[in-house]
Amino acid sequence: MAKSSQDLSSKKQFNWTTKVSNEEQQHEVVEEDTSVKISSNTNITKDGKTVTPLKLPEVSISKSPSLNTIHEEKRDDAKLIQESETSASASASTRRKAVVAKLKSVLTSLGKNRGNFQQGLGTKVVGTLFGHKNGHVHFAFQKDANSQPAFLVELATPISGLVQEMSSGLVRIALECDKTDEKKSTRLIDEPLWRTYCNGKKCGFATTRECGPKELQVLKAVEPISMGVGVLPRNEEESDECDSGDMMYMRAKFERVVGSRDSEAFYMMNPDCDGAAELSIYLLRV
Image (tube, rainbow, N blue to C red; front, side, top):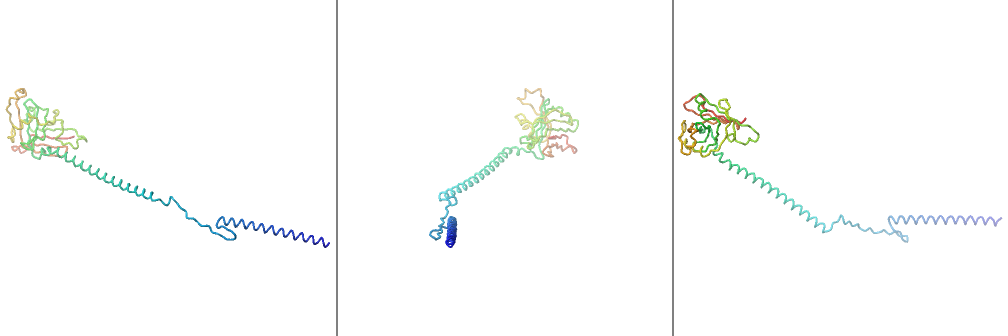
């Protein structure tokens, strides 16, 4: 009995020792795993000593440009500045050229219209009515007796019919032309075609004409006459126009009244008549 009890106690002791040794081994394995895990995350454990690994500085090539890259950026900035300066100077020269071209066009137009300004009519003008007895009526208005006519128009009315109208009383001649947007810059006396009315009756059309050699010859012949009515003698060149009759004329001073850019009137100034003008000519753009 004593021997069996000793055997039982020795077996229990052996089992307890084996269990304790197994737990210690497991505990050591866990500690080793933990130490390895910790060392892999933070430090390195060797021979019971902790060694802290050195951290190397990170080098970023993209954030630290090289010298070549800096030089290239400087060159790009210089190019941009040069291009901006070039574009600014080009725009300035373009504006300057536009201003110069505009001034040249204005000066050119002034030069072209200088003759018209010199031939412009004032408030007092010289008016001459002339034409062959069986021919058409011509009206010429001059700034003075020696100047070129600023307005010369030929009516379809024969001069004999006009003389008959004037002998019966006052004569009102109206010349009308069409008004369009394209004629805003055109002077009224520069209109080429007119509808003619004499004392309210339509008398065909009238045309604005340039002063030719024949018209200039008539005006030169009546240049010394300030006011009057008469017949000019024929010359040899007019021998083939015998069927047209004699050259009749009437010359007087007219008062010019401008109502607007679309209306003007010429009133014959007769010192012997205190009433209304015997002859009035109206230019209308309607």
